[in-house]
Length: 159
Image (tube, rainbow, N blue to C red; front, side, top):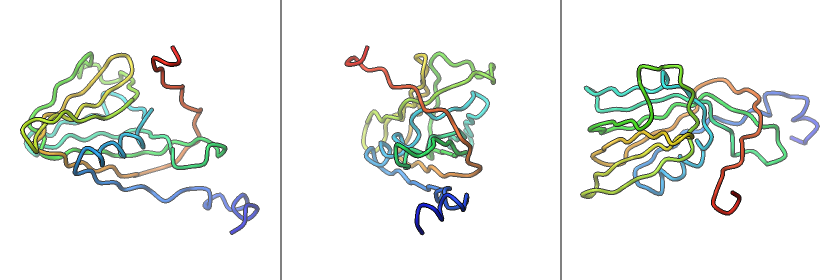
């Protein structure tokens, strides 16, 4: 299909939904990259203690498109299995409308294969999940919409 045909067919501009699985820290880094600058609210977080699962939904940027392509977000789900505990920093679960921006997801190893998965949010907020092992899945679930470009990430080099 040439560029003109793609522009005439809006469905051709919608990418296939992503489905990613993480079983180690390298896999988790790939998911983290795809979810960078994802937007959600505290109400989009759910710790299902009896199932040992932590789940969330967010609007992620479609980073997989060329830089000159229009920026879009899409509804994406992420869940972690084998979660033993969840702790929040600078987050109040009772204030459900608090807006969050996901910056990165990291892993702190413990006694192998256990450790802590940490979701880092803007404004010095974080969520720490104590896990038996890394077992996570990210899946695009819903609509796609146009979005403004994300803000640049502040680093020591550009501060």
